[in-house]
Image 1 (cartoon, rainbow, N blue to C red):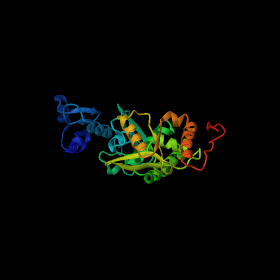
Image 2 (spheres, one colour; image 1 turned 90 degrees about the vertical axis):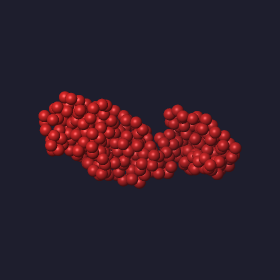
Image 3 (cartoon, rainbow, N blue to C red; image 1 turned 135 degrees about the vertical axis):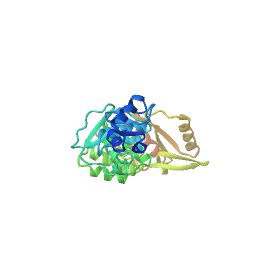
Image 4 (cartoon, rainbow, N blue to C red; image 1 turned 45 degrees about the vertical axis):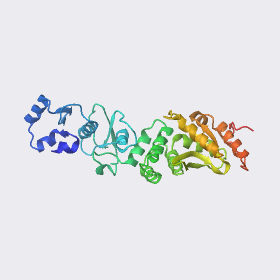
Amino acid sequence: MRAEEQAGVITRGQAVAEGISADQIRRRLRTGRWQRAFAGVYYTFSGKPTRPAVLWAALLTAGPDAVLSHQTAAELIGLIDRPEPPIHVSVPWQRHVRPIEGVWTHRRHRTPTEASARDPARTGVEDTVVDLTQAAKDVDAAVAWIARACNRRLTTPDRLRMAFSARERLRWREALTAAVADVAAGCHSVLELRYLRDVERPHGLPPGTRQRRRQDRGATTYSDVEYEPFGLVVELDGRAVHEDPGHDRLRDHVSAVRGRITLRFGWADVHRRPCVSAAAVAVLLRRAGWPSSPTRCGPKCRLPG
């Protein structure tokens, strides 16, 4: 039965094609063996529908050539950790789909190349990331999708670069292309990207090593930014609260024992006070033998001296 391939969901047309009459459909709905998901789309079971069944129902209701996209595709490929309403579906531009309760319908000119290979049909990783960047509220939120997709090893900067290039119309093209390049250089979060662009580069600091891997008593740790010749480590704490803040302190203590100083910056330090943060890094670098001096990022730079 077709429903078995669709998480227990079937359309009226599919049921009739399999020899189930209109009277039988009505009887099964009346007795509770089946449930109506949307007009002409049914759950062939009783009880609460599973998440896959709900997604199949939305997709079948949207009609031919529809694909799950945006946050819903991100859910299926592991880019986000939990479902986010509404369900997002993309359909060809020329199709007009009636409003579907709980479903956001996007019309697009280009059908994602990987959709036909997915079951249920959904946009591929790269198309999903590009879609999410274009739906983001600002450029920082857009860049966050790039960093997350690469950090979770769902795609690569090269693949994303090609996906962005393939889009004829793209908001923030220059910023997103630059973000892909910076992620390729080792930045794993928006805060790390901000540090690179607002603290390190514009103030003439030496380039640090991103995500430096170290082994300590069998445990693997990574430094956000390390200025290895000068024994300085910069750790960047995002806006989310760490599950184990003691882990950060332990990592700092290990660095101190090994003769490395750790500076820890939060979002406000990097976003609101980049010049002050650059000055702090520069002072420690010069004490450790850095032969240069930081430069001002512009006429309003708050770099001391």
